[in-house]
Length: 491
Image (cartoon, rainbow, N blue to C red; front, side, top):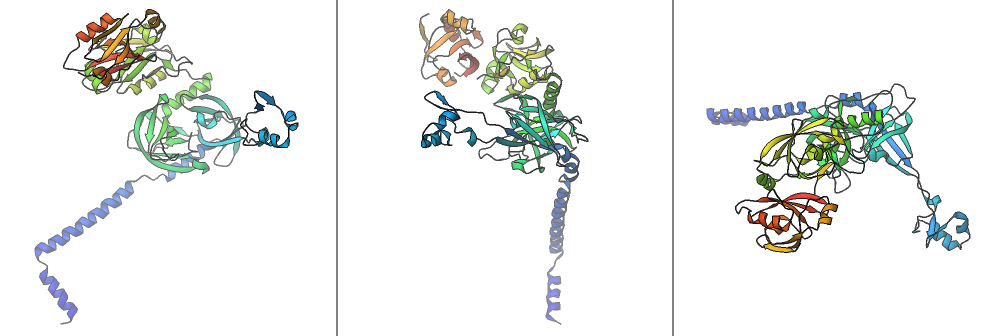
């Protein structure tokens, strides 16, 4: 018998039923793995048709800003070109050159150019983009995918939402995007962007929705959509699409330590953007609802002191005088739990809700006040221009009888209280190591409330301290540099 046949015979005799089943099981497992990977690959989204259908309505926006005319000066005296020519050559070069501390010669200054993205929202030529794309521009050029170029007019801008509305005239057959609803977005769903990062026109990037309702420090009225879609300089103002080919956001910002994309990008929800667009188009400006309170986050300690089972809501640290909130009877220490029936989970949820409310409309706030939930009806006012935000996170003799707290206080002079809009309080003059210091109380803070008890004088302060419970944390309301906030003092 040939050697090969002998080996096969030996192998067949060595394959017991148990080993045979084991091998079959391994083969089945491998087939299952490859099959599941094949199915997973088939479930990944295909953006091909979506990009083909929607890219034509995305535009490239380039801007030109002329340099401001500058004159050289020396010891406060201006020099014009004729006077400069009378100076020695080396001084002329000094005042005109780029090294000049007075700005150099106008001849050496070049127009500043920048680039961004946008998209067409109506057949009559309205284009949406970011305010920072066109801010200060003297000339705005809009270029379409078919290479048509138009000079655009800036219809209006809204720096608070970083929105700008442009219009191109005398254009025919303009492609238009389909507008979706950002309120229907779910965390984890696929989205994609089209824009011009670094000037590379019609670049497509994709990812998922990472979070909703993000509040950024400089933007109190925009509940940003957070994604991991790659966004870079030049993408600003471009559309963010869902898998139905609808615009659900405007790419606006990134979080970065390098200057480039690091996996975290933010888009303005299209629901908010279209509200801004309609107001700019119809009225020429944007009006926002105003409540007139300063709010802060409710952390675990504050929730405990106010009797909440878990941290939620927006804590009213201060009610502004003559504001809609003051007229409605809202009080400092109230915690807003609902706004028109919508839950307020984080303090950052409240400003966009108020901002979207039409001026003059009555809103119902459900607040926690002294352990009970009460409804307060507020007629929403218009956010004054001079106020950067309507609802934003807040950031006698001496008394040494509060030794356990480590505080020394004195009465707030009546004239100071009146100028600060306070009914009274005590000024902290010294803070030793103790419960008050650990809570964050510092000299020059004004204490107006302890454990929900008003403090208008040193006498009130002593009585409130004497009644403090020994076994639980209490809240302390302070005013620091004109801003009220609540701190938590632990035993």
